Image 1 (cartoon, rainbow, N blue to C red):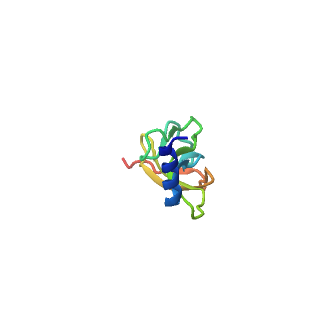
Image 2 (cartoon, rainbow, N blue to C red):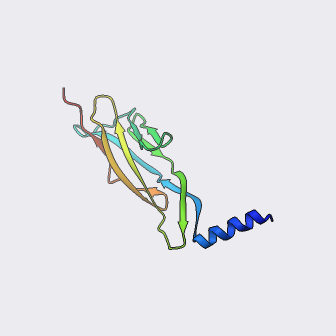
Image 3 (cartoon, one colour):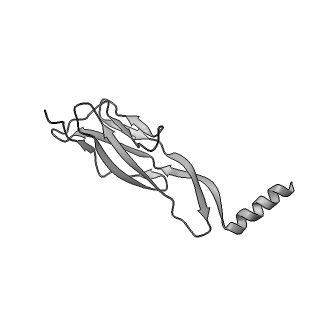
Length: 122
């Protein structure tokens, strides 16, 4: 093993932290419906504006599924909870944009029922 690697390992351990990949945005499944009549909205975009890859388009029955997204974090020797979060933005033609915060535990996010979009005023 090279001396540089040993020095880097020693400095990392001495700092009591090191980088690692973990779930940054949780897996989320749900549906998007109209707040006016409860009908599903197909073709709605569900995404987190902070990530270009964390997005889904709803099916004709309004359902969507987002896979978990990993990112780099710093692990500190103090115990940490496996927590992740996403700020979902939901858009569809003819409806007002909706934003909802979703928190995940161990990579799974939970929604409190369907996401209800309000129709745009004419």
